[in-house]
Image (tube, rainbow, N blue to C red; front, side, top):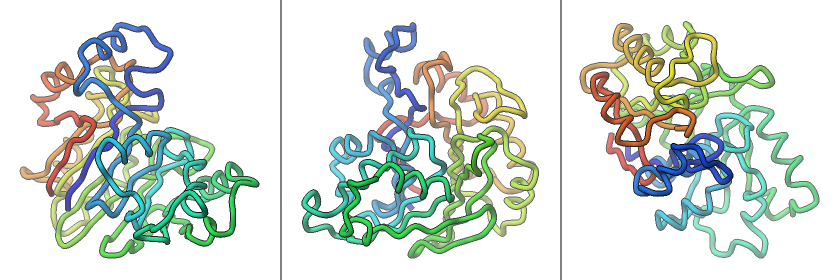
Length: 279
């Protein structure tokens, strides 16, 4: 599997549009890997993880044809992870010659309902017929073409069951765990029961250098390091598992190189926009 990080920021992006904190000013000045758009990832150019408002920019910047994407996994209905208005443009007079006319969307009920609420009168039959929503639940495995996908419960919000995903194909596996705090015990138990260690783990690091502890909906580097250790102790990860931090907020305090230096002792590397990982 090939994993491409299209965007690596939290809800506000980095630098944030209306912010003049030290971190945002530094990112504007330094550029490069310090410029982060809203989090989104792509597996094998076919399976998309989340759908933020920066989706159009990601396709343009990476030279991607999103009409070829067959499957979309959505973690929850917060707008930095699901921007339904863009899906209204997927058909009709807006989209000709699409390579994959049908898009299968795996999500919870709140995401599906938000789409119909946001689309409103702009949703034409041509577009609606090309979207297939599949409601998924924690620990219930589903198939997305050649991918075996298991939704897992995220520790993130009280108003809906947010999810993160285990994606498997041909002996390779990716745990994409964002907008979640430290995992629930049952998640460690489930992952410990797998036959082989995870190939890669992408962990929420919204809070940067700050620790959130057990009862928060995001993680910082200390939390990600603790989750990594738990996965290793459980046998869910091994010496060849690649650990990657993602989903960064300017409130976390560390720019890209600063995070990389501080995360190196934990064998965690920070993602950046456009980063590609071969699994």
